[in-house]
Image (cartoon, rainbow, N blue to C red; front, side, top):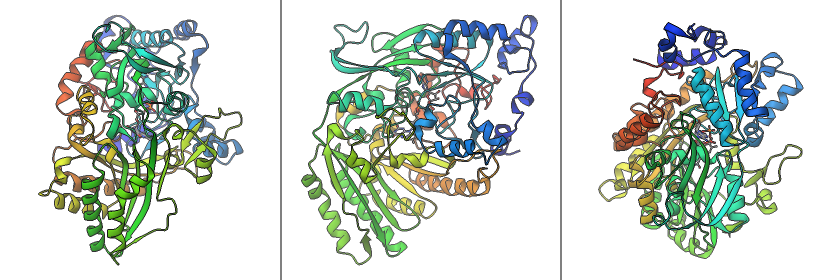
Length: 606
Ligand SMILES: Cc1cc2nc3c(=O)[nH]c(=O)nc-3n(C[C@H](O)[C@H](O)[C@H](O)COP(=O)(O)OP(=O)(O)OC[C@H]3O[C@@H](n4cnc5c(N)ncnc54)[C@H](O)[C@@H]3O)c2cc1C
């Protein structure tokens, strides 16, 4: 059976756990075999009630059995409660607050979001250590969930014990933070310490809105801090401030032996390096992160417009124009976010800037706008607010003005905290089911005179198959030297240092779930979309052979993922893994060392 189909079968089979579980003796002669396959409910190795109660006694009411609200939908798909669940899938906070759910509900032919058996909704590092010790001693599949935004499904697994960090969201600012053990070696810095379960909206509120500082986090406000930093992590202004991981000063982390460790440049520096971009859920469970706080620019702004070409040939010329314009005028730390292409011959600009006033941004864009106006082949959709600015301090604040313009929305549940805000542009991804995805770092050398035509041809060819977007903030070529140096000292693929952009293609459908009548994922459409997004990536990789890809925004089926996600850093990262987690307690799909495990993370291979 084709691997994709096999995975899909396994993920959707209602009795997958019973079918897949190996019956193992818990003690004695089979002990070594038991370590090859993790325990499943119903086999002899699964902990007894008394043993689960032992964990319950250690962590108190943090311990909980997990039940998915979708169980109800499977039984009564047209009930009022089920319809309410379906509505809640468009509220990222409602999903995030549910122990059983993840922001992406699945990926057709890849994975389906499934709840763990039990969770520890940790409030402190001690709860996490208790869960880690229990999982190790009982030979359980262990998963970690923070913001729950993994596209790869790495924060859920059936028949597992979940460590859920959502409640660990305390935030504290420091005027002069020195990492533990680094006195005299690392200069004191303004910093913020954040519980691992915090999401970026909470951090931006504390650091920018309340305290007038800048912290490098993610674009999406509901992404988890720990997941993003361990990915490397990009925000809209990363071309100026670098990777989120580049600003990490210290992490508190529970390793597979249950020890609560401090990792920074002076203590466990190898673990510290691996946590910076080595991928979430592979090295340990982070419980707290301390990030550098940078000076806040005065102004943030945005440029939004859609330009249409009258024919495919005109569209190819338009691609040439915008890439030339990017190279000469936008390829610098001021500019971030996206230039989008697609089969409908429309070019969408959705960019942001920092450190420029509106009038300065207008001057930058005028030559491009003049060139568009001068050609009968192009037209710009009416947009009264093409270029806007705001005081940087209010950028992440859900002001009435931003809500009225539809840029920001609030958690609409009764009694929800007032700060529960999200960009409406990210709402389409709440509860989504992915059909296809791919990302490719595009080296800045492609902007050179000898390569630019080939790049534009590839972008045009790719756009014939499906939508794609250049995220110029997710490639660090053109960033300040200190941002590049900090990124170089992370596990992230060094390809990011040379790339002017990350090209992303994605296709998805709105919330759906296998087994819920009337809400089944559209598998036939998904496969057509997967084919189309695959062609987009193939066109780009014609001009970027052996390309790098961003671990957290990538194809579930990426071949040679070790090289694509970490490049020349992979061997070093694997050595860190072997030092801190030699038995592979932490396994996620295409995470470091996962090649030693079956796709479901239950069986050690070889
Ligand atoms: C709508 C949306 C927008 C996004 N926007 C951006 C963006 O602007 N920039 C960007 O760089 N990425 C972006 N991403 C990708 C995102 O950063 C990653 O998926 C990130 O890993 C999510 O972290 P999380 O905590 O929300 O997710 P989770 O699914 O909870 O975790 C992701 C991974 O990290 C692990 N993990 C989580 N917490 C911990 C912990 N405390 N210790 C150890 N491991 C942990 C999990 O096990 C899992 O493997 C976006 C994703 C979505 C869905």
